[in-house]
Image (cartoon, rainbow, N blue to C red):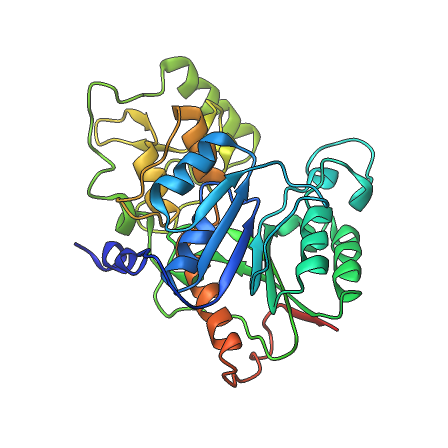
Length: 332
């Protein structure tokens, strides 16, 4: 077993009789919860997708409730609130309504923070919040600042925290002063570290790209001026996994080129390993649903390192200021 697969052994769950409790809002299949539970934090999940709820409850110690969250949803008291609210106002075209958009998950999250007043809250979201949608980010932060929290925002790449994937995400943390993001690790894992032992396996149900798909992909890569073919490269971290490029037969789909030249579609287990889910984690639902669960998830190893920083903050540990040059924003 290589060092990457050994590192996933840290992702263990067990019932915690004491310790901090985290509400996991918009919990998905439990990637964020797995990282937090492995750090000793109890979780209570809330998610509207029934199949994702089944996956969460099948694998994790905490219980996940199937519910569509609104600003009025009743929630128990907790020390921490975590989650990845959906961001319809800027992820789809059309009128930009921000916090007034009924499809947006941020009002429910902000309402939960206002009513529960946790010691800390943590939000994971897409990198676009810092760039083309930064005006919306400032709208969200203004609402959170009004609740008397310091708000720290950082763009992190999961590959710097034990995940063999180039995956940039925005992390927003609300605290009362003194929280520090985890430092990047010295070791970076590659796609080969994660899947080389299974990537070239072929079974009766293995799905291959057909001739027309190969032709389409060649045209796609030429039109997009793709320098490197978008097959999985074993010598470096994988490109970002998404619902679309896992579940959809598109020119951008994740695939593995076999020694005989054929391209096979990525399997669920290969995708899960690239997201840092250990092999014991079993996804519930049909193929499309499970690929969507993986693509939407917060990588558990990234979540674990964030959770360890949360534990240090709750324990009152003094952590030095971040080095200059890190993209970190403190908004009081």
